[in-house]
Amino acid sequence: MCEFCLKHGEGQKWYLQARNYSEDLLSDIRRRKMIEDFAANSQAVAGAIEKMDKLSKAPKFIQALVRRLIPRRMKKRHYGQVVPIEDVEKIFGFVNSIARVACYCRHFTIGKEKRYCYGISMGPNGGKFGEIMRGVDTSFLFGPDSAGVEMISKEQAIANFREHEKEGLCHTVWTFQTPFIGGICNCDRADCLAMRCTVTHNIPVMFRAEFVARIDNDKCIGCRQCMRLCQFGAISYSASNKKAVIDKSKCYGCGICRSVCNKNAISLEPRESDPVAARLW
Ligand code: SF4
Ligand code: SF4
Image 1 (cartoon, protein in one colour):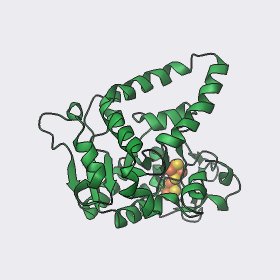
Image 2 (cartoon, helix red, strand yellow; image 1 turned 30 degrees about the vertical axis):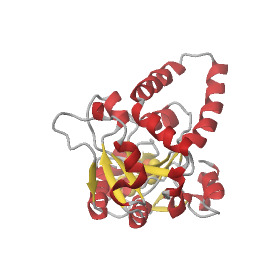
Image 3 (cartoon, helix red, strand yellow; image 1 turned 90 degrees about the vertical axis):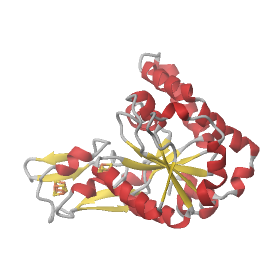
Image 4 (cartoon, protein in one colour; image 1 turned 180 degrees about the vertical axis):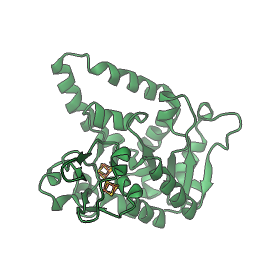
């Protein structure tokens, strides 16, 4: 269990607790302000990307300090966790509205509108979260022919997420003043600030999933399709055995490698069941 499960889930998966999505949490003025600032202050995302890219050139002690301070701060404000599709379906099962929106990160990293982010709420029509977002000018994110925010059904959202998996995108839940969860994103390492920060720069702003992947050697035919999709470089190929091999120390447990395995050779098991993965978050 990650530390949020202990702190915000009473030992169960924290992101499957309905209270962490509750409208009540949005009555907190500081949280509402944080969400407004987050949505309106677009330059903060661009600035963070720039700073992070510069960090690798900073003296080692600065890097070490940043690696310690940023995760600590982000755990209180805006922290994420990788979530496999089965758990995304469970979340969509109990929230009452789902809005598809353009991704902030991709707006800056590739300069395109990509609708990979989903706002979720317990209230109808976006609830209080939607109310806050509708009050913020986010028009810079959308093109002239764009639908802006689209409200979609649970069935449509799940179908979209399955398509995102085929594109190699990994699902992540996000807090807005922890423990309130307001969004689920579909990330990749090249374009997403959080994944760049966590995986490329080793400054964690999200936890790995509560799971880790395993390959059934009796089923694997060594086609290597799964290697192509893994965002975390966790899969290699054993030429002598002609099988794919998962490095548990690198696996984030997203499960997207399963979507391309025609032999059904990959499964997810609880992270705590693996001695290597259990220590890594
Ligand atoms: S996609 Fe499946 S069969 Fe192909 S290498 Fe990966 S685990 Fe093996
Ligand atoms: S090996 Fe692990 S990190 Fe890589 S795609 Fe599969 S589950 Fe995700």
